[in-house]
Image (cartoon, rainbow, N blue to C red; front, side, top):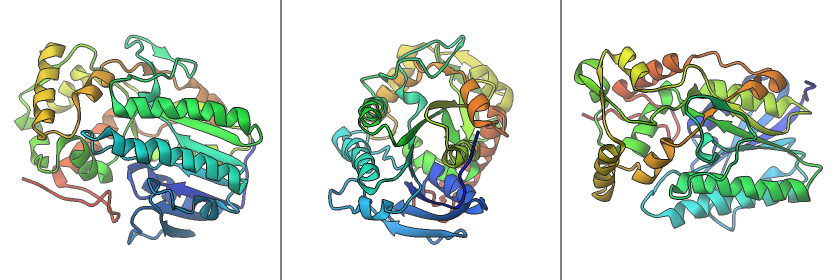
Length: 343
């Protein structure tokens, strides 16, 4: 794999879970000359070689072309998970905002685009064996997150056809966790008032074992390492699955926490989530729960062989670190990652 040096890299969504790890790794890379982080709010955090600009991708007035001018690559990470009760709002940021990014990459003459897709872009698939990047990416249509990720896969199909000179990389990571993301992810998926101390093993006497609830996880820093490799490569293009071993299910979580697993029918679990979501007690929607039960297990051979990528953390280590951060109300010095201990 050949690599580039001396580049100027622009990162959208630079203050979130993935963005902070990507910006940090790029700023520490001696082969990267400078990093421009784009976010809605400029953070106090300022790593070496990094500048910031306030940009809202949902705004048609955002000067993305101006920010991208002279860049050697754009890493597009910006994404809004909420509000799940208003999918038109997330569509404006996630889909229309991403299309503005793609158009600005072309208008500014940026030679490389590294886009954050997701395992959520995949069509329903198997849980008992892994699939590679050729698995269909039509998402789960009832879940806004999956619908938006899949739509952007089709948008990039057209973009690549119309701009063959631009190197396009699509990263499809599993669920991403790190200690510093704990407070943000609690607010996004569990609600801002969910007490972190509830994650203590002694308060979890049993874990629900829902059929189909078997997914993959990855440390955010390990995902960021793959993004850095894709930026530095002159050859990498196309999709790359990113996940750590082993897959996560109730048995693995039970072994971590010492809790006993109890079989729970899908319908019962979904009904409870739907009721809490309908009462606005839980931000995560039942539609996303439906999608998670259908996500395939991914084969990451291509990332290993073509990018030379290896995760440094197992999924068990990732979850142990995240749960400690959850209990402590861990965060970081950016608005999305601000720490807050509740309860």
